[in-house]
Image (tube, rainbow, N blue to C red; front, side, top):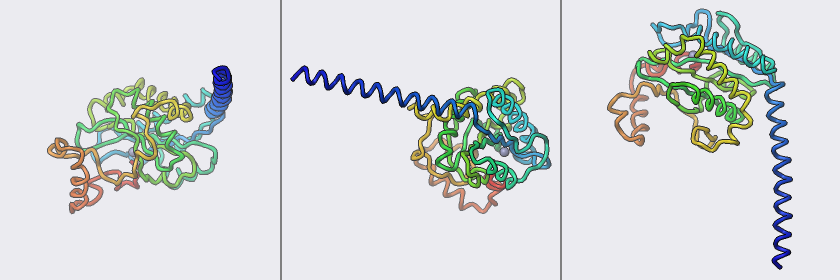
Length: 277
Ligand SMILES: [Zn+2]
């Protein structure tokens, strides 16, 4: 009996090893395919007469997004990716055109680059948006690297129906690379070395999209279930008294905000600008 049990254990162990071997080989193949031959459509937010950000903002968001996008293009091209830019200069490209470009590459990935802004100077941090479930591994991986490599706070992976995320048929993410209205984050964004770092972290996320979610179990990596679709509320404009309350009161204050008679544009700039961020 003990001998049989031993044999069975040996058999089970060898089966497990064989299975794991096959699994990791398949994973490795998938990962390498992903990084070598992928097409990445890079979307630099805003452009032309659309500066991005909020009215009166000193640093034009459109310039920062284009610079990071062009750096990302070079980093990804150097690692063997095919790269398509929705814009490669300071021109206006409509959201419809951006989506059409993305959807003309059915096996591609779509990466939108944005910077955040808020009327409250203290608002800061990195956030990454996705909409379709297929986009979550890419969003988690990109966010993991960008938020991990940035000195800014981690505002998390969020699900929201931005036009470019909703209308694209391929995995699509939108990275908010920090707040240009936050003095510290704006100072970082204005240095070439930091924009290069952002590009390299985004590229690392693109390359790691098949491995980050499966390899990590930390709370930094989101699961589809943990991220409900978020309403268009400006989460940067929480009054001081609200911030000291418990998280449970958040819903209440959100409802109160909705009831306010202010137009949507003054509450949340995202809602007023083609839902683009
Ligand atoms: Zn933007």
